[in-house]
Image (cartoon, rainbow, N blue to C red; front, side, top):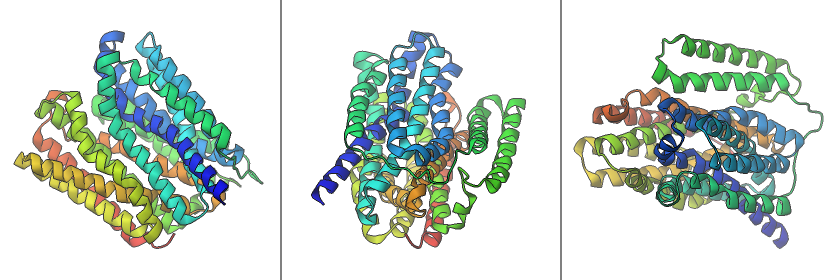
Length: 451
């Protein structure tokens, strides 16, 4: 028993190495953009794609890689994703041009998509006991929060002392150590019996997600009436309808729509999506407020965000323990509710120009997210049988990342652009985010009723 527990603990450590890299690169690059622009002579559009190439490939491929993990082995897919991510990081660090850098960021996105959903599926099999699994997911989510905190602060320090390429070189030792631990201690798991790869499902899912995220990201710049944006939305709709029709007829679909007959699975993913919709939009709006209204430096912005993410990262393991003891319903609903109220408090703090109100609201938001995040993840992957844990975790991560991008695109338009960002626009975006979180709290309360 002790050996099994030790192996499970090392498994948790191994997947947390990969998770830290993946989540770090969601934020760390932002503080390096100015240096990249000057060094590689990149325009604004090129810089947008340096950020977006990672996010688009990351979110659009997770359904595919989660299903591949169920079919061919979760450890195999996770380790392969780590290798791709490290190779992509080295390529980013050596990039001679912004075109090469965008391609390398895309490779990072593919690696992240392969590793992240399978890391959760690995934990699902390493911790069969529901309470221990909830605690492990709490630590998993805590590392995620730590990476988000480290992104702006660590990135600012690295860029200031060693240049922008250092934010990619830092992934090399972390990735290699995590890969070694994975190959040495993580057990393989899969469930290929009687199943085959759903190729058309993969293609249509990628088409729908890439088209939707492209339209959401580029619509603000090109205009919602632009021909390319309209075409992207149309393609997303057609691909989505075709995906539904194809998956209904497939004997072993990648995205089994029967999953959504399970209320806990549907509700937890809806609430997770609303959570990231609001959180990503608030981060975007609040960062612009600090940069262009308060005129703070990127390093100072990172320290302000740490007020929110430090309690988030520190409290997440306890959130996992609470979920393990009480189940997912109460921490998910109460955590999302607290986060939504914290965002309303933040909007009022900006109007009152009160630093005490602002920092207290950020602290409340962090604590609410610490309670809700592991609860929603545990509910999503626990609602389906263990043999579909890869697909369950992939869909949960896809819903969160895709909805996060949509939140920035849809609510970000309220803020303004660059120096034209206004306090009123930021308040409107944060208030809209709060509505999304409170709606997620209601959904969690009513529909997440059992594990």
